[in-house]
Length: 612
Image (tube, rainbow, N blue to C red; front, top):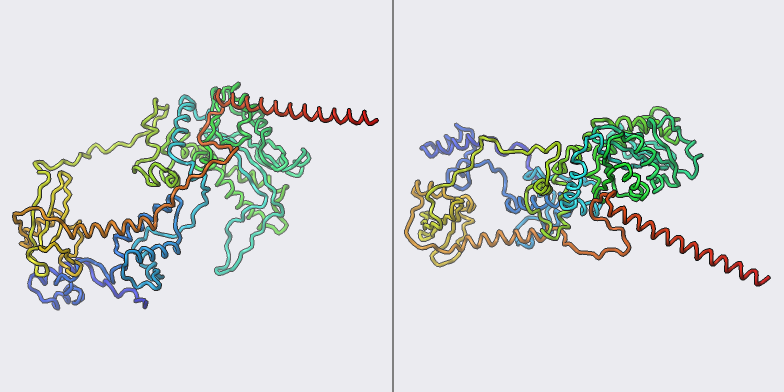
């Protein structure tokens, strides 16, 4: 399709067009009005004869009706919010399928829209853009739902209600790789590749920081890779984060022993004398060892575990600390290696770079912001953005993937809490000057009138039924011919308006102009209205079928899987008893295995002695 140059359409103002039309109606010739108001004569002729409406609608009409496109955009944007976004290629293919199923006449080659349609579609709907989505695992999108998170906030409000911000702590781990992610650098436009030097080792270091809602932080706990304490000598530990506690582990991971070590030798030493206190953390196995929980219970420390796979929105360290930390670490490593060819990020230089990034990220402002954005302090379930719950809608079997209401998914938590926290949430109220809309008085329900349209293009016996449907002020307008045949109004510019435009105000205006008159008669059945409504519901149904969410296919749970589906108060008697029981069973099993092994060894000794 040939492209037209810019600036050849619409070289006039809509007000000038309206003034020119009024001048023609007052008796001025079309030619003189066109010259006086700077409007093309052909455009003015089309508006005065009623061929086109008085509006700035340049160019040909869209191939697909605009109401279909609007609904299509609404569905597509909803899909992207739920984690089921479609690509440009999928969009074009599904539009082609919709056009074929609706039997619309289009100039599409091979029945699929091309570049011209896509360009026009984006111009008509500037809210639609192509974005690269962020990675979100399926289990995370499924677990972050209103029920799970709402129950967590109810428990959180109970354990933190009487506590000060210095008594509410959050702990989490993150890994720092010595092979950093290079930061963006200046380069030549069009360059095929831009090299970014990194270190020669891919070893990982685990950082375990702990912060409170007042913006304070404990000395960080660092785990390096190694099997003995000699492995730590390769690191310049004195250049690392201030007062950091260094440990070693075969894979630089947190294990049960290190988790208990951190709690007893770091947390209890730096949490202060206030009691009780709350420690909020994830459900990693190293955070819930029996020794750690018993020490917490003895020191009046409540340990609350987040719901599994929800820390990306509920954990303060994940929300506002670890992102800036990794970004700053990448910047510092890039600057360090680019300042001298001999500089390299390794075990010797990494601790200093980690310390600089640590001091940049772990500021009081960032820490306090993390607790506020996750709703921990001040307690506020509505701090979690509403959009965070959209991906879980696809797995909700109750509403089939559709949101039930427009209110925040956690609004029910505020309605069901039994007590108000020390720092209550400021509820937003309507302005005092807003008054409810008064309902019309003396409105008769089920009022029916018959309106006859006098137009040359339509038989004089065509009737319009306007039915008032009560006090809501809504009207439906129906057309029917005398022989009960459906009228084709698509070619008549005088009546090719949408049914929604034919409301009570337009009917009264038409009566005032003499184009309509009210005649007595019974209500007639709206064949055309039913046909238009049926066609609309048909394409709407087809569109929903083509763009709908994938169906939910339930899968049986895996055997012997560690399934956690909610938050847990780890210091509660129930969980402690379960931990003690599990430890007792493990010890008994170990004793049986040892006894069996000893018996086997004794039998071998007896056999050897008999042979001698």
